[in-house]
Image (cartoon, rainbow, N blue to C red):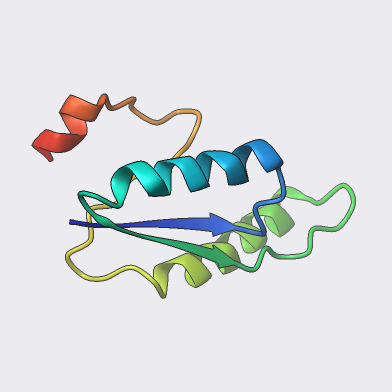
Length: 91
């Protein structure tokens, strides 16, 4: 299994960069790990709902370019379902 992490925008926070390095070391024995950073869209100050929606669409298009037809996709979102390592292994 190959693991690809796609992030919108540069990963600037040191704690995230450190976590990625550590996770890369741990997972490298079992899987190939790729990190892809896609450009984030410029957001105006106080964007309208329509502008927000267009921004998300453009960023989604950039992400979709890297997904393969048979990809198993996991998104990190507030309303998402939490998976344990065991749950993920079953997928």
